[in-house]
Length: 65
Image 1: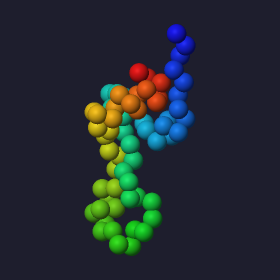
Image 2: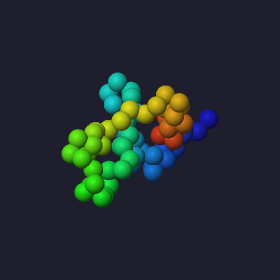
Image 3: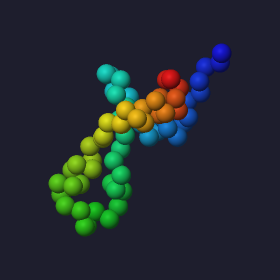
């Protein structure tokens, strides 16, 4: 069976930690910061862990399934 190819769009959007968790960026962190509080901007700057329900699908896109 051939190797799974990595979907490059997914590879740019997700990072895998050393422990195997898949991290993603948070939404609403691109522009229009003038109506967001400082604490909201700080929270949006941190990466979020991917939900377990989505993990299988993303692993397949990254060629790790």
